[in-house]
Amino acid sequence: MSSPEPGPEQRSLIEALAAEHAAVFGYGLVAAFADPSRAEQVSADTAAHRARRDATIDALRAAGLEPPVAAPGYTVPFPVTDPVGAAQLAVQIESDTATAWRSVVERARSEPARATAIDALTEAALRAAWWRSALGITPPTVALPGQP
Image 1 (cartoon, rainbow, N blue to C red):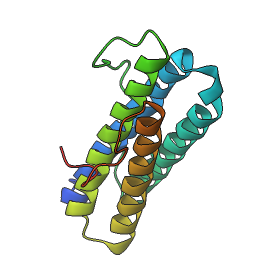
Image 2 (cartoon, rainbow, N blue to C red):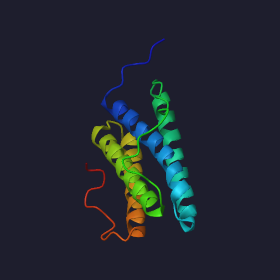
Image 3 (cartoon, helix red, strand yellow):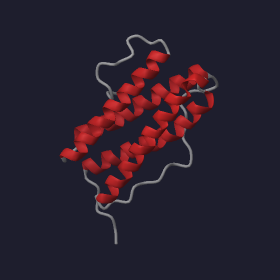
Image 4 (cartoon, one colour):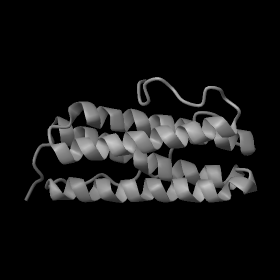
């Protein structure tokens, strides 16, 4: 039995799942180098991405698709060796996941998929703003989260 060919909505969910897999991996690196006073935030963000990853896997399976597994490793766009680099990576992770979920918003055909994507995009934008604020970046928000 083969899986159905994914449509635009499902392909965007597959891309969002890939971003969530990368986020879970990336937050492991953030946890290793983050300021210890940020441990609670790192833990909460990691848990949020794990939950979003798991829910996306469930949604793809419900659509009759076999979700791709996480890659064996990921490339980090810059060296992370200290708390500042860890916070910068957290901002990058949230920006990347926001971009992926914005794509789902744009391609979603079902109301549940669109609502899930809007929630995920909003949550990523809020986490990114928190990390930008921690870095002293002003303003901590961007006009259109998820826009590449």
